[in-house]
Length: 74
Image (cartoon, rainbow, N blue to C red):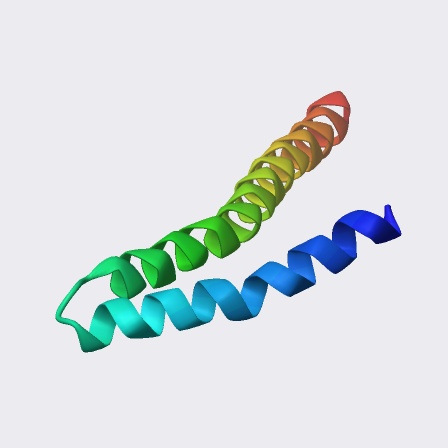
């Protein structure tokens, strides 16, 4: 596990320099790289938010059914 982390850390400066050089030469690789990073960072938040909304909606529905059932029995 730790060996993989050292290799990944060694690649970061190389990727950064490659993207900077590409942007300086008029390329758009760096912009695409930034969009890809933002896309990958947004997916976990979107997934957790969606699951939270589904849980909240189902919990609210369950609670309202219990309240309606208790009032209908009286």
